[in-house]
Image (cartoon, rainbow, N blue to C red):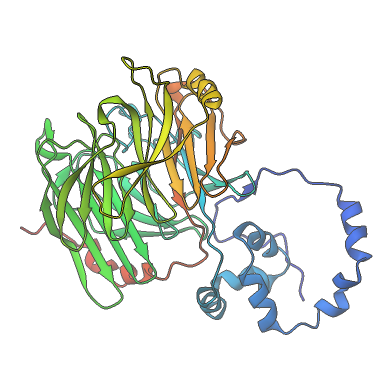
Length: 441
């Protein structure tokens, strides 16, 4: 097995660094050499197909470390046979999160950078986006870079191992889908309607891509209104719709949060003033409102998806009643119209949380059994394990320096690392039409 030369350049310029401490290498080497199960005479004779199968089961961080062993292991990521093997294996789902340091928006989740035309990422000065991958199982942070993402784009959604980037300029919105693990970037056609800061919903499966863009219709160069939504769809069966599905939004709706949550073929978003939940059936192309629980007493509500359920996380304040302030989690029942309270933050912990939050608000993101609650401007976040009923503070991200509200805060998305996302091939086949794509009435 040929040694991996240090002079061979990496095809992707992203970084994948772990915030972990290394023990003494000498003692580790002695332990391995004295273990008969690690005898190289045994491992060197394993069939190549069996080795590939073992490597395919490695978690992403271990896989990228293993790529440094030799040329062949390094090139596995570009080998069709290995990628086909990886896709056919059943992998344990990794309910991770990816965070970006973004300037806090005033009325939208599509972030601005004070009018500058450069990238909104305030964590660097080279116009290269940085992301921070968080593993809630090991409480570990990893750093990713996105050198292929052009300036003037911001992350807006995530699904199926892909992150959606949306253009910040007013007008028809351009979108990219990127896989940060392998460094790929695929472009979608621009939307048909001009918008300012719309909400983006994304659903990616192994055989289809659905994107929903809603709200902030530009009715003039100086005014916007939440009037319509438009949808993009493409699947392996050959059916595609390039923003050809349009729908009218409910009256008096507001998308201040800017994000959508996809669940069972529907997109959900918080509606403000008063609080309610906007729901959109992708197949039926229909919008409606769901009344929020205790809507008169909610503070900073957020929608998250957790283990196949739609959850609403919010602080509750009943100033006129003898009810202590609290942070609660509700779940939407199967009927789709009523909520039930599932969890409540312990009162002693809520006192600490409220002191740090200090009325400045918080935002949440959920994935699998985990919910992360981020307190802007403090560098603090809480993690709640729904299965084990465990609350704990998230260790600070070692790659982020906090310099106040103007410097930006961490905003996160649910993310499942994947070495291959073959559905993007469907978009690559339409690359040429996309490049000449124009607005069609």
